[in-house]
Length: 265
Image (cartoon, rainbow, N blue to C red):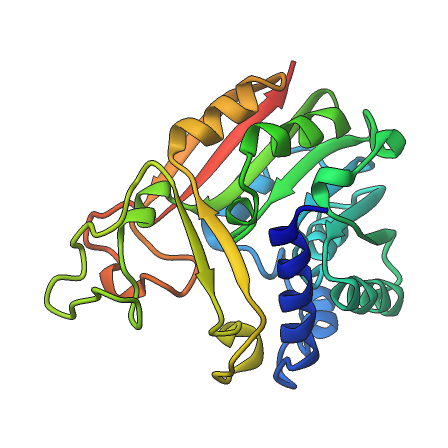
């Protein structure tokens, strides 16, 4: 396992151990009672156009499993399998799936290490906000994804727009309240290291183990997919933030999020 991935595993498990009591507390209630909870309206609209009934769905970097469980339940899927590197998050997700009596399985694994056990398994793959940045090599990442997809399987990626790579969010060096859309960082790729924890999960600031992530331009995302047998079938771009880092420039015409669609040849 690469050193940065090993470090991220430790940092994510530390964050989950320090999670706020509210984190994940609403999973069972919302999935039991709501229509496609934990997806934004635009993603929900896309997912409802896909035939998920009786299908097998995979999610890579599934976090606490809430999105996959939501889609499996509301889309009447046959099975869902989620992958994440943090063992404690995966254990939590499996507990919630059991509580909800859903046919979901969560696996603790480095995505790069997924073997042929899951080859040609998925009819649908979903990737959601904050997944792509944890991998230095998207061609290698999508090679794994492509291997697990059946012929004609579809992939739905709802992520931050790559243009956000250039922006500073509040608390970052160079952030200027009066110039929130100033482009400060390299669009074509940047390595980030931080020890500021995961506030959205813990609701507190703490000196954490080191997180390492990478920004990628749109070309690396699309090329990674195309190199591994995934044809791009659609792209939607939005000027609203889905990662709680750039909401200060919501609805100002700057591309902040996207839905990228593909199909396995």
